[in-house]
Length: 390
Image 1 (cartoon, helix red, strand yellow):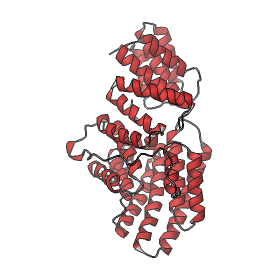
Image 2 (cartoon, helix red, strand yellow):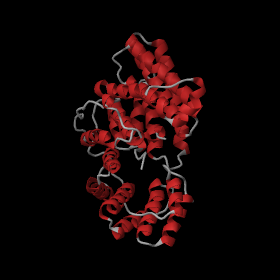
Image 3 (cartoon, one colour):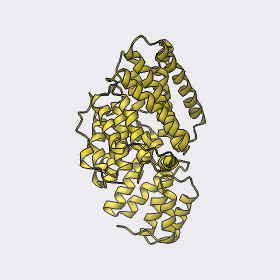
Image 4 (cartoon, helix red, strand yellow):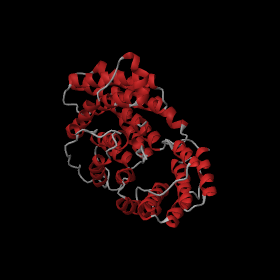
C-alpha cells in the first residue's frame, strides 16, 4: 500500500530508480534522545519530530516574538501546522488549517520586511529562503486539496525565491530541499502535470532527486526533512522501498524516541514485504504505544496492530491471529485510515476462511467510508471476486 508516511502525505498522490541517481550513503546525525538546548529553533524541530506540535510551536512562537524582523520564527510555525495536517490528514482540523493560512501570511510579511532591511547578501538569502519555503508549504497543502493550478503557481513563486536565496548566498543548501521537491513533483505528480500540460511547463525528476541529496549532504536545518521527502519518493513514487530503508534506519537511529521515525522504518519493511522485520518492529511499536513510553501514544497501537495483522496474514497465513489484530483495531470505529484498512483486511481474512458473506460486509464498510489510498478501488475489486491468499 502506498503513501503511509504522513509527513509527506500532502505531496502523495512506480518506476525503478535508475542507478545514476541513487543516493550516496549519508551518515546519521548525532543521537538525539533529548532536545538540544540554547537554540530554540533546533529544540523546536526536535519536538516536532516527536510529533509534539504544541511544544514545538511554543518554541517557534517565542523565537518569532523575540526576533520580529526574522522570518525564521513564523516559517517554522507554518511548518508545524503543515506537519500536523499531514500527519493527521484523516482528521478534520479546521483550526489548524486556519492557523496555517495565518502563519503563512505572517511569514510572507516577515520575509518581505527582512529582505527590504537586510544589511548583506546572507541576510537577503535567508529572507528569500524562509519566504520561499512558506510559499512551498502552502503550495503543498493546496496539492493535498487537489487545487492543482493554485498549488503550481504558489510553488513556482516559492521556487523562484529559493533560487534567489542561492543567488544571494550559494551556501544556503537548505534551499535545495524545496527546489528538489518542486522539480521532482512538477515532473511526476499526475494532477500537477495534467493541469500544466498546456503551459508546456515541466520539472525534472532526476534533477529533483539530486537536489534533495544536496540538501541532505550539505544542509543546515533541512537534512532531516529532505530525508523524509526522499523516503516518501522512494516508497510511494519510485516503488523502490529498498532505497528508502537505509534512510529510515538512519532517522530512527538518530531520533530513537520519535514514533514517526520508527513507523517510517516499519513501513519501509512493509513496502519490501519483509514480514519478519515488520512483525519485530511493529511489536516493539505496539508495546511502546500501550505503555505510552515517551513520546509514543496510545493511538500508535493502531498502525502497529494493522502491520502485525497484515504481516501475520501474508507470511504465516495464520487467519485467526490476523483476525484478532484487526478486531482489536476495530474495537473503536472512527474516521481513521487505519480503521478503513482494517475493514479491508478483515474482509480478505474472511474470504480466506471461506466466509464470503462476512467478507462482503467488510468490503461494503470500506466503501461507506472516506476513500484512502485506493481503498475503494481495492474493496470494489473484492466485492466482485473473492480474495485469495498469495
